[in-house]
Length: 231
Image (cartoon, rainbow, N blue to C red; front, side, top):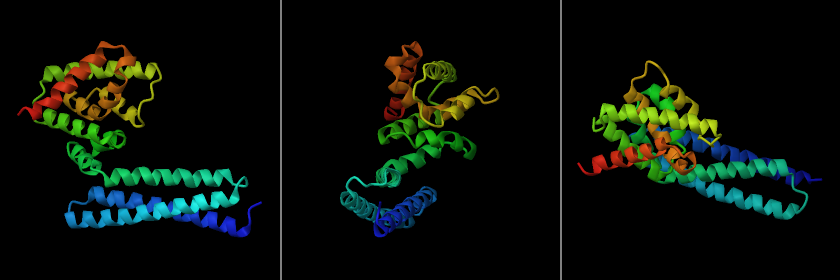
């Protein structure tokens, strides 16, 4: 049985960790929507302050766990640990260069298209976001032929159908992209554009897919990435 003091400490720790996660979410929205460098720096400083708070709360949790020994309330501890992990991941994402590249990717899309690609884009690593942005530039600057666009869209449909049929772990948000790919009134260029953020995930399964489509998609991907580099 936990003492009243320990219960109070755990409850307060959970409240504090939840507050930090909520603030991080708010700052993230402001940082992504803000264009003024001074204001962006203000939010970055606030985010770094939250990193220190997160570290302090982790130390507090470890101290409580040590004192409790085998009497730990596992459910409550697990919730706090999960939230600390979420905070850590979000802090690393916001502190790195992903935010600027992420904004550059979203700039290629309308508000409606952003709603489709945003969940997928958030799951990309920094190097992948850079590649996605380079490919989008090539497409938007008409460096990719209509014939090639149609070919790759057809191959993407084939690859996505195969991956779903084989129960591959596609990233959350893939359903919206699959729907866009098969939407009858969406032209092929826009169908390809909204599919670009998921291509790095498809390529990671290329060997397991065993499809010629995977090879063709990679060939096109590498070719598009170099178009702007060679301009």
